[in-house]
Image (cartoon, rainbow, N blue to C red):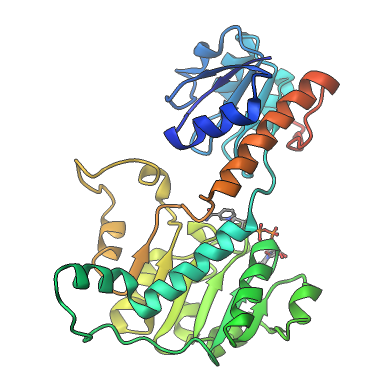
Length: 333
Ligand code: NAI
């Protein structure tokens, strides 16, 4: 099939070419897919899109006009696609439902360990010939209580790894995971988790029920000096409340891989300009805040799986008229 790949990043092109192995005719564009760029898909059967592409109603109409029959998303999320418009235009939408929960779980642990033992600060100090230990004091993770919010695929792996460190495990999830209870993890209500945990890590999806789950009220219930980690979705945390909690010392350490307004920042190189988001810029001023730019998924294994599943979706669509992982279509206009 003729496939045009939008938002190509240097890091994923080689993986897609390898997974394709000459099967489909691929054209790579580094620009984002939007209503303005959609006419570039003229004559292609499939568009392959990434997380920050804008597949709104107008884009979909342009794609249909261009003769496109399938949208192959290189992501699990599909909140950037107008599914009703796609269904009406007869466009099939496919996605990559899961790639590597290990990648995200291991990055979560990396944030906890780096923040606790101040690796990022120690690295710079030693390179400058400063071997003083002041300001680098950490704590033993052994024996500490970890509160995991969401024990699905990623949360379960986080629990397994921290069990190996000798931590006591608490969790909140409306659905209990027997593999976690088998580890000795105890399910509790959110209030208990907030009050008893030394480290709180968020592994739940963003939904109306979890939007700003961590707000001023929740932070007020937490232990003084708690460590908070978010590798799920930015809007699970109210950033203003987080900054207030850091300023009072109620929150002792924060590790974030996601941020509620990240769409205007992450995946871009802004190093030659400035950070236009004052709230984010304020977060960066705290020595006890460590931020990565939505890279928890970013391992060789996960990027390989994304490329292979994307190509498999396209091949299944060509062969059977339906991808392996369709996004459920939505009725309506
Ligand atoms: P999953 O679907 O396996 O697990 C999610 C768990 O959250 C389920 O057990 C579910 O019952 C639970 N949950 C639902 N509502 C909840 C609530 N109100 N409070 C607490 N828990 C609740 O998903 P998986 O694969 O473990 O991923 C979790 C999240 O991680 C994703 O939704 C995504 O937002 C994030 N993620 C982040 C990545 C990154 O690069 N930073 C990459 C991939 C996923």
